[in-house]
Length: 126
Image (cartoon, rainbow, N blue to C red):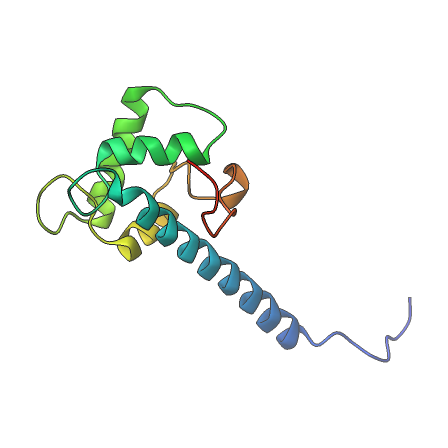
């Protein structure tokens, strides 16, 4: 092929790639926290309870899961995000967002799998 007089700067390439990926992770974390804030107010308690998690899944995902699968998903999220006041709710939006992104098999983990998830701000009905 011959000599390439203007080689690609791999350091710049990798730095740009990492910046783009970190920006996408930040957007996903922000949108998950906003989703948490939207669905936490369905009952009198602060935080997201199992019934609110079910509503969140129904709103965001085109597919449905059995009640047993939804309960398992919520229990894994509750363990990962923490239950600060031991009331069975996920209490913190930031912890919720990180737990969703880190929990294997979590259906809200990847934006590409969700429906209407990026339709923020929330000007539509649930």
